[in-house]
Length: 418
Image 1 (cartoon, rainbow, N blue to C red):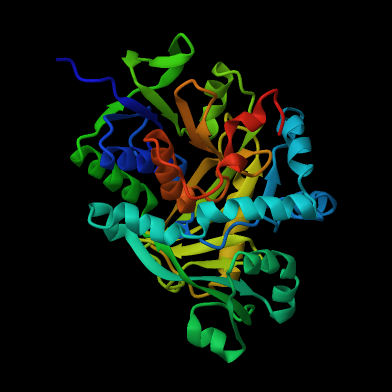
Image 2: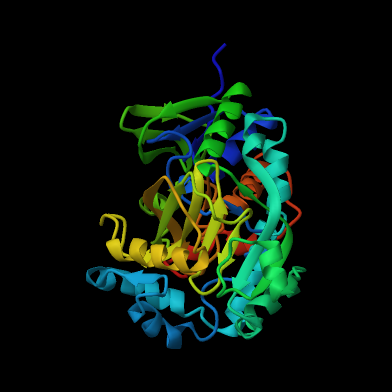
């Protein structure tokens, strides 16, 4: 007897590996395919925070008015490669169309089910595996210059409160008691309990990929270029190593999913939010848990290799190499936040976050093609990856998820709409 064709999961980041594990736990034959080793793409370079409270989109009211000043301010973590602006404009117009109160509240409401139990979902995925060694339960703390700066963020905090997230406020001398390595410019903290972080996101995803193989899953390193259909359903994928037959496909390749979605007839308004981080290797004088520095809009996270500082956004497409200015800005902000920081070395990284114009991920089947998708998580990919994988596995095995999946439907982009 011949073995049934497997479900192919394309993309070995946190979403793809999570989906592959949950499918294998349900007894589905699965092959995981990626052009690179597991955990070496966007999932490698994030801030590592399990940010349950991060459901508020960037497109808040007032963004259109503030954006020009942000781009022109060398100390604000938003950068633009001006030569890329003509290509960016169609996406940017759709993106900024959502920068109003009604859409912001809707997007926050729809993102909440994907992230609100993120830390618990990571435990459900990783506990009992080698990946569990990388998961740390912790606070997630937002650092402000003063109470007035915190109050200026009232709109964002009101949306978090609507989702059930209420911070503990620490002020004055108690700030240094809580985190002695913070600089004197910080006098107010908003502490979120029951969050967490990953000590090495790349190592974590690689460990989960090993667990997938231990469960009987197959791994193949190849670049997927197209789909083959029998009738209206996918029956194989075309790779640089030839065709691979399949029963179903899960597409979880982040911003690189866009050209393959075109093969399915959907023009998804998807751009790269080019992200930057610096690892201060072997660092001392940094924080003991993840801290979001509100002034610099970056997150400092203690990791196995050192202190990782991440969070810069640059629009400049997939082709251009890293820019110097974001790294320079990040170093300035880190020095202000942690004046006693010392490190053996510094390691720079730049990668690509997948940003749909409506700030919501795509999760579900494309029509009745047998192609399922899980990508487009903006800044919440690590937090929401295990939940996304679990939802996809439920849908694919005939279960009904306990949340409304309509907001994430790929069909919302039929006809090229945002």
